[in-house]
Each structure stands twice: as C-alpha cells, then as structure tokens.
Length: 83
Image (tube, rainbow, N blue to C red; front, side, top):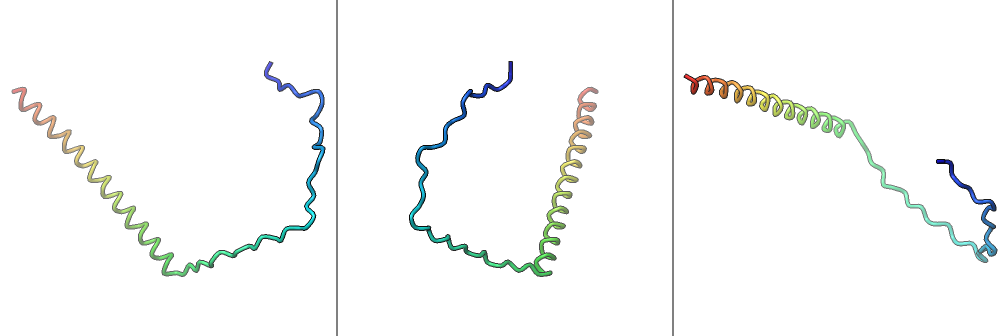
C-alpha cells in the first residue's frame, strides 16, 4: 500500500550533451585572512564568560528571593485580614 511505484522504463539519456569548445579558466580562489588568537584574547573571553555567568546567577537568586518574599507577605496579609 505504501510502497513506491517505479516507472517501467527508465528515462532516456538526453539527446544532446553540451561540450565546451574552449575550457573556462579555473576560478581564482581567495584565501581568508588569518585570524590570530593569542592568550590575551582567550583570557578576555573566559573572564567575560565568568562575569556574565555570575550576573545571570545573581539575577536568578534575586528573582527567587523576591518570589519567596512575595509569598510570605501574601500569606501574612491574608492572615491579617481574616482576623
């Protein structure tokens, strides 16, 4: 049912094949500029990664502490209004 249906006769080869009379010149390959990575660059990338990771962790800890404080204040205010 899901098997592919193949044609009975394969497609014939093209009647005319184009053969260039004069060979085209090979394209000029341009080399990429060399990039030098020294120890200062690696150190700067590592320090930047550590700083960004520390900032992300600080934001996450702050968000969690604000959420906990909001839950505590909400429960305190709800208990205060019930009395």
